[in-house]
Length: 249
Image (cartoon, rainbow, N blue to C red):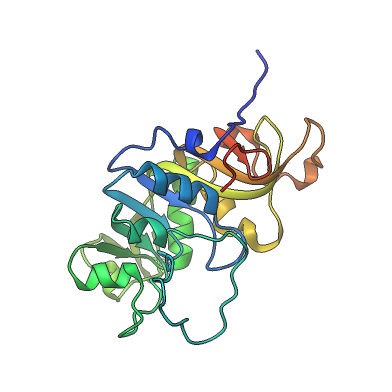
């Protein structure tokens, strides 16, 4: 039987995301590596009580008529981040390295819910977050790291002196679904990234029970340079193309 992981719509690709799921979301800030189409499909599905794991929770969409935030605003076309799901009341917890800024009068949906006591957050140092995701992918249940020792990060965690340094025991981040963004894929699910979009996308692909890839372009088998494949197909369960999807929005 031929292998074909291509889905005809983003809505179908996320159709089995259930209430209470733990979701890995790739991307790094406003860089063009966020699986925006998959996020909007999950927004339309309306799954609730989600836990989002990402570098940052995202800003969501500005309220109609609201003044733009200060500073430069550089976002790719058709951009949405995990903040859209938070804004829609679908998220109860965020696991992240950078929660962003909460400014009076310009608070993100995440910070507003946090201030209202309706959102839980687990702050994780960025390198530790990447390693906890990688550990899940590699089948490593836990590991020790000196990062966070002697700070609030170690609160409630086991510590141990190793090579003269106090280290903190961190556990692998287990997730139900990973939503990632790549530039190209074939129908087997081999992924090629573009520029800095590899960041957390490459780490998260294969680190959940189900990995769903949003890609810019589908190519025929053999159309990818083997040396350029960063995520082998064994780590990917579903692929949906921005160009070929029936709803593509």
